Length: 291
Image 1 (cartoon, one colour):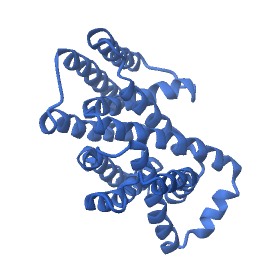
Image 2 (tube, helix red, strand yellow):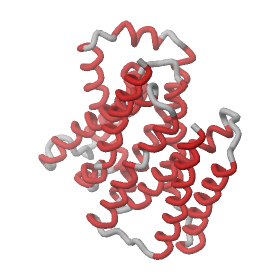
Image 3 (tube, rainbow, N blue to C red):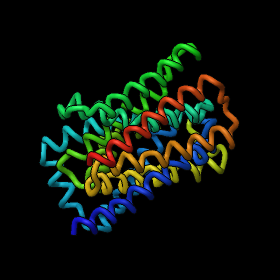
Image 4 (tube, rainbow, N blue to C red):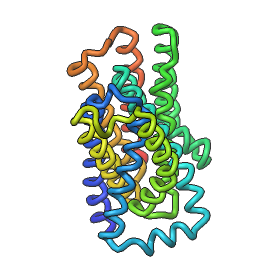
């Protein structure tokens, strides 16, 4: 039974990370919009899509149980803030031609998970794990020294998604019901913003580009599906396995940034990425032989 759960979780995780990996291609179609408007549509249409799934799967009673659990609600309140921040920063990065930074952020996420394990779960670091974190910090330092600024986009993406993954793993709630409640918490401010932009003639859903009318609802579906898959995978897999799968998304982002969007990749970026990649390699090997 455990092996079967692990196989199912691996398939779920693989699908989630591949979908996320091609997000830059999708959200480039909406780069002319305000990132806050795109995030609000992601939340609104995700809520519609998830409501349909909840009703179709007969999980209304499950939602009621989650709403009655104060501990679960606190977890989901925090995770909703984390994931919405992650969405907003990622969409901003894509629109500003910073896909390379987004890939750096998601490459750093497994190492952020190690730090969170130390800080929050009081886990002890093995020597090679310390080395991997030092190398990652060196990669950030290179950007600060040679580029002249901190890679804030990368750091925010890594921190928010690392915390989100940790909290969703320990939250006492299933994947679909948890995501539905998260989305419902975000839906009120999102709908308020959409009504405001609509009445002020600043919205883009109707009466502007026909492509916006298609891509904005699709953003909701593409938001919900991989998050459901990820949450389901996180409950079935070890953190080391999830950490390995996490390399898929930033690798795809990296190749799109360099070869599809021709973003600047100079010596500073090369040294920084080499530090991160070496840290990840050390982390992966250490996890493989000590799990």
